[in-house]
Image 1: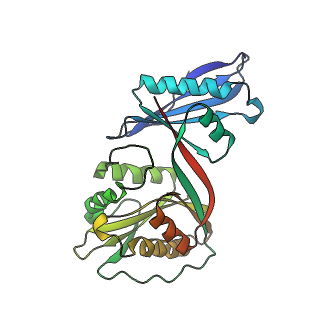
Image 2: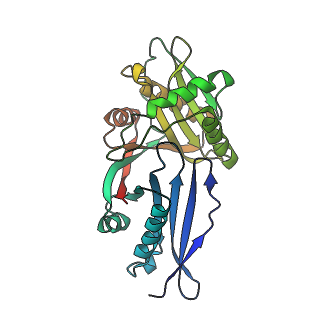
Image 3: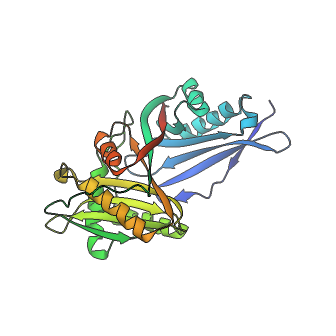
Length: 286
């Protein structure tokens, strides 16, 4: 097999991660595959690397994927990664490929979709709370409490993947909102305020720039002290209604949930989301 690997300088360098890449080429320079390795610089996540291996279907079975994976593993070790992650559709060729190379299943993600033509069930208000909504960055008076409310994600199910809390500060909140705005997409947030005016939970949705196709949920969380009251259901129902009014050409909403997150899956089922497919987040200890 006369396949060569070309290390690439990837422009995707972010404040909280950066990415390196390799291109697999024939002797005549024809590209036949690629590998990407994202290295995390966030506190509590520097031991994790995320890889993506791509080989043209017509070129599979020649050992190209194995060659690219070897490069990604070597790159991960050089950068002190201890656990390599890869997301693949369940029972796909990629799933079987990673299994053969020693990757276990860290968790399973269920991808679900809501057809916006589906009526939203009536959801009662939650006593003692009120809902607020904004686009993009939070209002100045809510920036800090919104940042604090992201702690509601700290105990989200993570399967066998060991991480520290995914810490946020106001700079990271601003960066995330500005990145979405730079793409031209719409970041839409609904949040629940408690009686003191602090955010008890939130639900984020990103809608494509042209308001067509499907929107994507980025996260829904409720702080532990406020759980068990139905806030997630209330916020997401309000978000669906608001989205229909603001983006009448939007077809649906998509979300992904760890299969063991029973509470959130039950919320999505009640609102009309229907499972579409599942992915394994596979792991390899280095």
